[in-house]
Image (cartoon, rainbow, N blue to C red; front, side):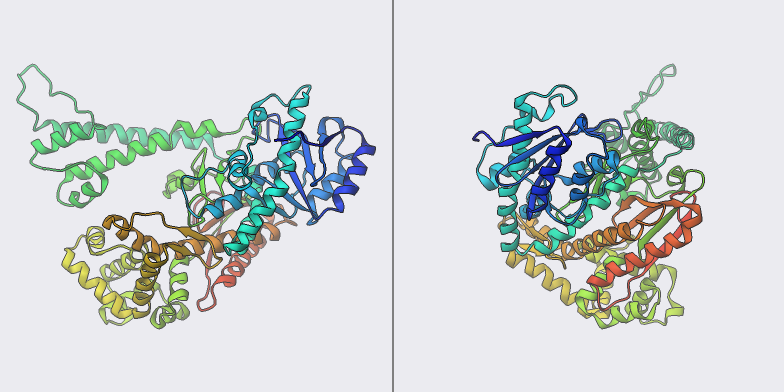
Amino acid sequence: MNTIQYKLITTPDELKQVVAVLAAAPAVGFDTETTGLDPHTSRARLLQLATREMSYVIDLDRFTPAQLQGVLDLLSSAHPLKIAHNAKFDAKFLLRQYGVRLGEVFDTYLASVLLSAGSESDRHGLGFVVERYLNLALDKEAQSSDWSGELTSYQLEYAARDAQVLLPLYEELERQLQEMDLMVVAQLEFDCILPVAAMELAGVYLDADLWREQIKRVRASHDAVSSELQNELARAAPQMSLFEAAPAINLDSPAQVKEALGRLGIKLEDTSEWRLQRLAPQYPVIQRLLEYRSLSKSLSSYGEGMLDFINPVTGRIHADFRQIGTPTGRMTCSAPGLQQVPHRQEYRSCFRAPQGRKLVIADYSQIEMRILADFSGDEALLQAFNSGADLHRATASQMFGVPLESVTREQRERAKSLNYGLIYGMGAEGLASRIGSTVEEAEELIARYFAAYPGVARWLREAAERALQQGSSRTASGRLWVFRLDPLDRQQLAALKRVGKNAPIQGTASDIFKRAMKLVDDALLSHDAQIINSIHDELVVECAAREAQEVARLLEDAMIAAGKEFLTKVPVVVDTVVADAWVKE
């Protein structure tokens, strides 16, 4: 790329002139350079703001917060539009270092992800996006350099270019978003940046002592089950002499476990989870093996390693939430995976509110089923929701032709399996495995279900056909997932039909949830409260104990309002609990 025009800003007078220029621009490129990745232990060193003609590099070390007020006000306002790449990162540093909430933003990273429409081959770092959409090579070598000391002209030019390239990139990405009818979902995502940034910055509190006690209990159970399993599998080991012990089996080796089970007369093609699940009711040893694997997974995923994520400055865990983690728009979480913490009380009770504070936990009630009812317009399903009756009991009543009060627990469980399973394209074999029936019985149940809900049957069929014909799927906000499958591969086509049914539903649930995060974040601004965790259809807010009931009301109202923006035919229900820990008491 050509040499860039930039100015290094080091005095208050220069800064005032720059703010006046930038305030008159409709949009500015926006970037920061920081001394590290953690806003709690590092600082923003440079702030870069660019017009098409000039890039301004502000050395933050030369200014007091008061001297920066003019440019901070500009960053927090709706005008000009800030063009950033992965704005969540910059937003966290601004919020932590200066208490500034980033205003209206266009994020070229999120725009690129949306335009890729589920492609796993596209990469979304700034260099890759600039090359893909502007056909320019962007030098990124200085990104990992030391930004804490005296800066070189190479570093300054690098910083200036990163901000200025965002303006032509924005124009091209916006054009393509409009062309692909993705502007609505793009704005939905942009509005969610600050709530996610603030959530990550706030973090969650984990009681380390309680967590260690839980690990100790899990390890004891793991060791006990391991010992019992070794004894059970050793019974069929080759005959040993009186003075020899049976050889130990590596319980983590599929080959050794398969061989040991074979000696017990249990012949398996492999020891995959789904295969073992189907045989578990017949063989206690397989139930024990599944229990061992579950405990092993708990120790590896939720053992001592979780404590390593406690930040030494804040004493809290600050996970990384990927805002568009899946093609359906669901967020994913890593370092650590808070969304995968087991639902069991013994785990979640370790995540607590500090003294004088409370947790407010709110989740959408059966949101995906409500979306299905709204999309399909099925009269019986709409009636079930609008009546306020228990959905699974109402479904069982429809399927089995019995009054609501006569529905048995088994009938309700079977209806529940169908309600959730069919959204994910579950067939007769999957249902049979889940409820422990024959495939024929499962086929009969599915037939009864579709007879009870013919509108659902029609919508699912048409959704699968649309996916085949169009090769893509959209949510209520227009979020696009383009399926890249081999049309001659029958297994891929079957998978496409399943995804075609589920993607619009799960994706619309993501749309609703992200809108809810924005509304909740806005509603909590005047309160001592902050979103601290997000799990697909559940939000966790930490607040001052004195405000807990008011915050619970605000949270519920905002989440319902978000749902009503997308769903018009069914009531939106949010279940809210105030607690001392992350449990629904």
